Amino acid sequence: MDVGRVLPVVWVGLGTIVVVSGLAAAHSRRAYTVGLSAVSVLWVVAGAGANGYFLARGDDYAGFAGGASTSFVRETWESVVVPHHTLFIGLLIAFEATAGVLVLIEGRPREAALVALIAFNVALIAFGWGFLVWSVPMAMALGLLLRVERARRHHGRTVLQGPARAAVG
Image (tube, rainbow, N blue to C red; front, side, top):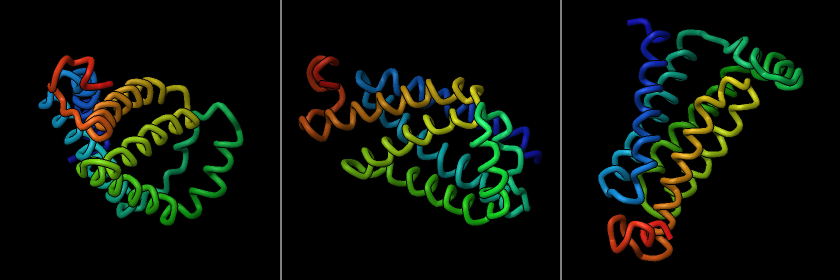
């Protein structure tokens, strides 16, 4: 199996599920649950798992920052991350796996994971404007899931309780 060809399809598929579910989460418990599950699979399997595979395969991530609009990002990536890719990609894997698991735990752990994943997606833009296509809808969808979680936790409301507008505060 050619992971390089399969992975983008998995990312787009799961990303689409996250975005569609995020849009419907305030009105549907099922959409909310499906969205959170897709977030978890996206970051645990297609994120941490894929990066673990690439790291084990010996990839050094050279050129990843090639699309960055600033030389600082490109040069820092190549001079700091690439020579120590095992450490930095190992930290990335730990982050992705942790966030992917925490998003399944209600309350503060889920909120923290969603905030971290929003920040992660915003930070991706530093690596090139092409990431806007991914990061903007993903950050928006994660934000919508976060909004529903906060409404559930802070107001004791559950999705579908009362008018949809009340479910998201």
